[in-house]
Length: 127
Figure (tube, rainbow, N blue to C red):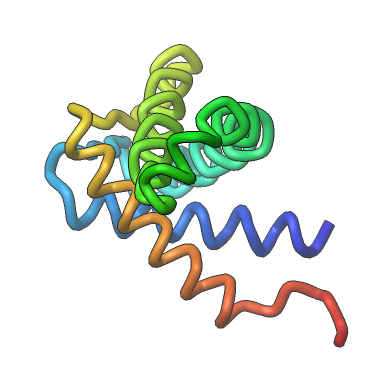
Protein backbone atom coordinates (compact mmCIF):
# COMPACT_ATOMS: atom_id res chain seq x y z
CA UNK A 1 0.00 0.00 0.00
CA UNK A 2 2.83 2.36 0.88
CA UNK A 3 4.49 1.65 -2.48
CA UNK A 4 1.23 2.53 -4.26
CA UNK A 5 1.00 5.86 -2.40
CA UNK A 6 4.61 6.70 -3.28
CA UNK A 7 4.00 5.94 -6.96
CA UNK A 8 0.76 7.94 -7.00
CA UNK A 9 2.49 10.89 -5.36
CA UNK A 10 5.37 10.73 -7.83
CA UNK A 11 2.95 10.53 -10.77
CA UNK A 12 0.96 13.50 -9.46
CA UNK A 13 4.14 15.56 -9.09
CA UNK A 14 5.35 14.52 -12.54
CA UNK A 15 2.00 15.47 -14.09
CA UNK A 16 2.19 18.82 -12.31
CA UNK A 17 5.67 19.49 -13.72
CA UNK A 18 4.52 18.60 -17.24
CA UNK A 19 1.47 20.86 -16.92
CA UNK A 20 3.68 23.66 -15.61
CA UNK A 21 6.29 23.33 -18.40
CA UNK A 22 4.00 22.75 -21.38
CA UNK A 23 1.27 25.27 -22.19
CA UNK A 24 -0.74 22.67 -24.15
CA UNK A 25 -1.18 20.47 -21.08
CA UNK A 26 -3.87 22.25 -19.13
CA UNK A 27 -4.91 21.76 -15.56
CA UNK A 28 -7.67 24.05 -14.40
CA UNK A 29 -9.42 24.43 -11.10
CA UNK A 30 -11.14 26.94 -8.88
CA UNK A 31 -8.35 27.09 -6.33
CA UNK A 32 -5.12 25.35 -5.39
CA UNK A 33 -6.99 22.65 -3.47
CA UNK A 34 -9.11 21.87 -6.51
CA UNK A 35 -6.02 21.61 -8.69
CA UNK A 36 -4.29 19.31 -6.21
CA UNK A 37 -7.36 17.06 -6.01
CA UNK A 38 -7.57 16.99 -9.80
CA UNK A 39 -3.86 16.11 -10.02
CA UNK A 40 -4.27 13.26 -7.54
CA UNK A 41 -7.29 11.87 -9.39
CA UNK A 42 -5.55 12.19 -12.78
CA UNK A 43 -2.46 10.50 -11.30
CA UNK A 44 -4.65 7.59 -10.19
CA UNK A 45 -6.18 7.35 -13.67
CA UNK A 46 -2.70 7.57 -15.21
CA UNK A 47 -1.48 4.82 -12.89
CA UNK A 48 -4.39 2.57 -13.84
CA UNK A 49 -3.82 3.20 -17.54
CA UNK A 50 -0.13 2.36 -17.14
CA UNK A 51 -0.97 -0.75 -15.10
CA UNK A 52 -3.73 -2.15 -17.33
CA UNK A 53 -3.33 -0.83 -20.86
CA UNK A 54 0.40 -0.19 -21.25
CA UNK A 55 1.53 -3.84 -20.88
CA UNK A 56 -0.94 -4.90 -23.55
CA UNK A 57 0.25 -2.18 -25.93
CA UNK A 58 3.89 -3.07 -25.25
CA UNK A 59 3.18 -6.74 -25.98
CA UNK A 60 1.36 -5.94 -29.22
CA UNK A 61 4.13 -3.61 -30.36
CA UNK A 62 7.02 -5.85 -29.32
CA UNK A 63 8.44 -6.07 -32.86
CA UNK A 64 8.51 -2.26 -33.02
CA UNK A 65 10.34 -2.13 -29.67
CA UNK A 66 12.99 -4.42 -31.11
CA UNK A 67 13.15 -2.64 -34.45
CA UNK A 68 13.45 0.86 -32.96
CA UNK A 69 15.68 -0.22 -30.06
CA UNK A 70 13.07 0.97 -27.59
CA UNK A 71 12.42 4.42 -29.03
CA UNK A 72 8.80 3.45 -29.63
CA UNK A 73 8.47 3.84 -25.84
CA UNK A 74 8.11 7.59 -26.43
CA UNK A 75 5.09 6.95 -28.66
CA UNK A 76 3.57 4.45 -26.22
CA UNK A 77 3.99 6.91 -23.33
CA UNK A 78 2.38 9.64 -25.45
CA UNK A 79 -0.56 7.38 -26.24
CA UNK A 80 -0.99 6.54 -22.53
CA UNK A 81 -0.99 10.27 -21.71
CA UNK A 82 -3.56 10.97 -24.44
CA UNK A 83 -5.71 8.11 -23.15
CA UNK A 84 -5.45 9.55 -19.64
CA UNK A 85 -6.52 12.94 -20.99
CA UNK A 86 -9.50 11.36 -22.72
CA UNK A 87 -10.51 9.48 -19.58
CA UNK A 88 -10.09 12.65 -17.53
CA UNK A 89 -12.50 14.42 -19.90
CA UNK A 90 -14.96 11.53 -19.52
CA UNK A 91 -14.66 11.70 -15.73
CA UNK A 92 -15.11 15.50 -15.85
CA UNK A 93 -11.62 16.19 -14.52
CA UNK A 94 -10.11 19.43 -15.74
CA UNK A 95 -6.95 17.98 -17.27
CA UNK A 96 -6.32 18.05 -21.01
CA UNK A 97 -3.44 17.29 -23.36
CA UNK A 98 -3.64 19.06 -26.71
CA UNK A 99 -1.98 17.18 -29.56
CA UNK A 100 0.28 14.22 -30.15
CA UNK A 101 3.62 16.04 -30.04
CA UNK A 102 2.68 17.72 -26.77
CA UNK A 103 1.88 14.25 -25.45
CA UNK A 104 5.28 12.95 -26.61
CA UNK A 105 7.12 15.76 -24.84
CA UNK A 106 4.82 15.50 -21.82
CA UNK A 107 5.37 11.75 -21.63
CA UNK A 108 9.12 12.31 -21.72
CA UNK A 109 8.93 14.91 -18.95
CA UNK A 110 6.65 12.72 -16.83
CA UNK A 111 8.94 9.71 -17.27
CA UNK A 112 12.06 11.62 -16.23
CA UNK A 113 10.44 13.39 -13.26
CA UNK A 114 8.68 10.22 -12.03
CA UNK A 115 11.92 8.24 -12.36
CA UNK A 116 13.84 10.84 -10.34
CA UNK A 117 11.12 10.97 -7.68
CA UNK A 118 10.99 7.17 -7.44
CA UNK A 119 14.71 7.24 -6.71
CA UNK A 120 14.35 9.99 -4.11
CA UNK A 121 11.18 8.82 -2.32
CA UNK A 122 11.17 5.76 -0.07
CA UNK A 123 9.12 2.88 -1.41
CA UNK A 124 8.82 0.80 1.74
CA UNK A 125 10.97 -2.04 0.39
CA UNK A 126 13.93 -3.13 2.44
CA UNK A 127 17.01 -4.57 0.86
